Length: 315
Image 1 (cartoon, rainbow, N blue to C red):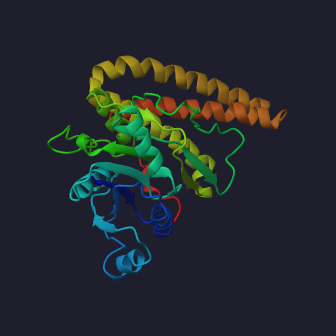
Image 2: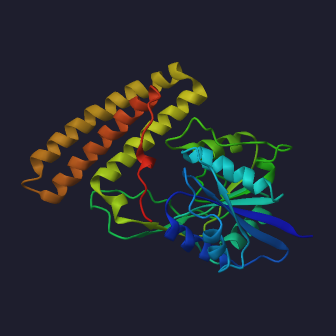
């Protein structure tokens, strides 16, 4: 019996990265008895891949690719459009990958196999990051530690994930991304709710995708902005799920500690820098990160949006 798998990609103003992503999907090993196709959602007021442009790209691929357009600017709008687009093709499984990533040829094969072996409905794999320019020495990359395939998880991002269509079908769990989370954490929130709804979610340690990190994403300003955004969206997520009062009891003391220690570390680092440059810079930026996290938590607590994703890195 043939099963159908739809790979969904959301994109905005990064045509070259999107092409590289689709070329990698075109090279996927097709598991026996599995039909694969892709849907692409352009999240932009004016789509680039329509008519002749879309036809020129798809003519170079053996993988069927269908283009959709979501003009409302915001990641959860695009992701929900992608889920609806996927459902139009009556899939058994839906995979999500970002437009700045390239899949290994055995990516889908590994995810499907792990779900079958561990009786899981969601499988999340690792991302191997390729930096155009090294990150600053003081930046601590958010690397996930290796875990055995089959390890049960309770949350996941959308950069490398496979999910059963039951999770999004209207006759199943009918889950969608929360469209109030326009400035981050919408994917973590979605899969937390998936876990709470009873779907088994697992880690697949050898199902790799590669992500290109442009030099613009590792500038000091951009890295600090990312920390501020993550803290903002994380706090706002708790406000939506548990209420502002409960969130305030948690985040006001936490934010205060973060900003006080952050200010202290920044001042000490500034004083130390002239005598021990690398150590002083590390302490200085550690303090700034703490300040960004603390102020971001307060920003999210009061529901103030962050504009990190308004800037597009890459092309």
